[in-house]
Image (cartoon, rainbow, N blue to C red; front, side, top):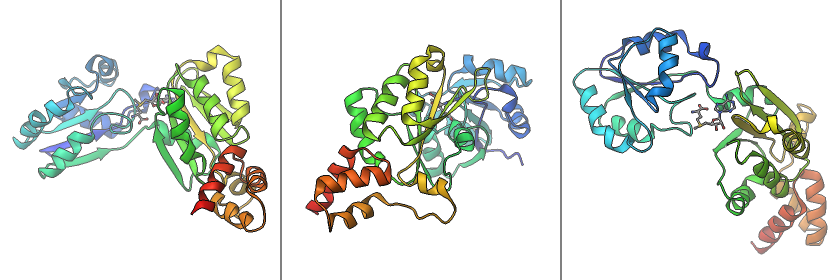
Length: 285
Ligand code: SAM
């Protein structure tokens, strides 16, 4: 399985250090170099697994300037692995520019799959996973975050959001404001670590549990948010999926906009404001 002149993209644990796969361990021992987002951070994990391959730093601030060096090294027939601080490289992590550059030059890039907070959180969310959208980290400021949430609030499928401990309370409040406080959600905190917590409930219930307990505001978070059709998906296999735009368009044929907004909010689990704005938009078209 091991080839020369190849860049391996290797997933590492998101918490529990034994989640590094047997193949990842083998490969990290065999490659000539490991490019790591933070070499000091990765060293304990590598040492724990008996990996003493030389590490080089490759992070978002030096990725561009490292590209030529990595390519030249691989073109001599050497092999290398890219790892980040946790989980799968390129998923809200560095590596995209390097992978593109290698592909453009015909250098083989091969994945060594493993942990990722997105899939770990989805797998315990109890929310529909047949269709989902990963949207990364929301903007840091509330105004920009609310604008960012507006179009997402209308989507029928599950959303996966990363958030940091400094902003978790404010972010949950903004979700309640824009998406609605009755939408089902799962908050996955510190997955695979000592204080792993998975909270299920409505946005309101989860937001209350987090704001009332400062321990719940610590660590790393993934928010899994049900889409507008979640209730129907959870209601039974044959339940119809309620599409927000379709609902609004049908109701607009019979009712004034304000009533459309009220009915849509109830049917689709979105806020009246969101339903009202969308109804105006669709009416204009
Ligand atoms: N590349 C990583 C992956 O594959 O998930 C993500 C890196 S991103 C810089 C870090 C974010 O991932 C955290 O802020 C948090 O939102 C999420 N995350 C990482 N580890 C986690 C864990 N153990 N539990 C919950 N969320 C986690």
